Length: 421
Image (cartoon, rainbow, N blue to C red; front, side):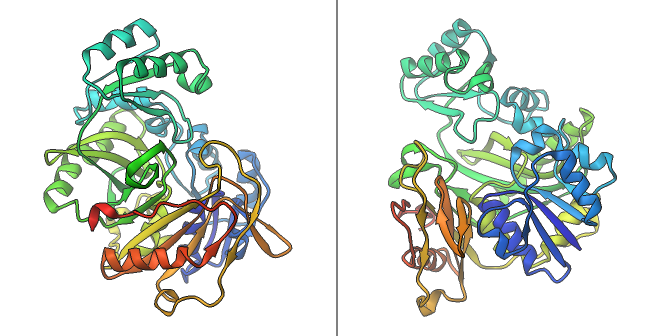
């Protein structure tokens, strides 16, 4: 099987790493990839979707996997399918579940999927009036894609109004903020659940928990994610069943009813409040860094899972997962998430601790390659992943690996997976 992966981050690296170990995969391509994916396969410098479809046809690509959300929202899956190409991901219409928070919230309301009380509006006075009815904190969300930064948790009503004003004026997020969601704050604990879907059937992956805040103790600004672990002990069989019955099944049935059957990864951001799951958001692709910890937990071939989902054959598939735990710690650049940073060479100690040699790996994201050396290029640079028979063991190994990785200005949290300890 020849596989093309669209994207350039740690998520795409981790998918590539899983496929590299897959006996069914002969050739692996990344578009555009990063400085480290070239060690797993071949990077190709093609950005236009029609040209990527040309490449897939000419290179006899058997399966294309889309990593990030932007190509999905743009409709890359529709372009490939129009050529008769096999591609894993939702259609442009189905990708609206992530592309528009307004569409997503209205979808939840229409199909009675539990979520926070909200309004959607493009009128500042309407938003202000609703804000005054809510206790603090108040959640304000931009409608469109904002690279994971379009959600503001305002500590006061004035702060919430300032967030709304910035979004609706276009100053905060441009056109992505021209409509807003204002909703009540849910007090509970967050979970990430991922369902691999083929439009009708689905396979649920181990539940994960990520860490959005930049600093220890969940302080500082929101980021794309500073670490994650899976499976989380915060989910029991009762919660799993509630999520299946109240969220996943109604979502798949609802998307079919809307004429846009959902195929690909359904990432469900949940808040568990008094044992009840409420949906915070949908994403239509793997989370990052959750993907980096979920891929190593798969015992079944990754290519089979993605291919059967893309060809509507999940009903015939049995997927096995490891009984281990995985912890991923993100290393970010000096100025993340505020501004870009100067390139810095990455040095990984060659003599690693005996305990981590066979139970850890690095998923690379914001890196470039020059004369055989890797450089951190800004943002989230890499994820140190540790595996173990317990969360404590996996966590210890991940942090031991962090101690082996060096670059100027490296930034990381020291408390990933603290909720499970």
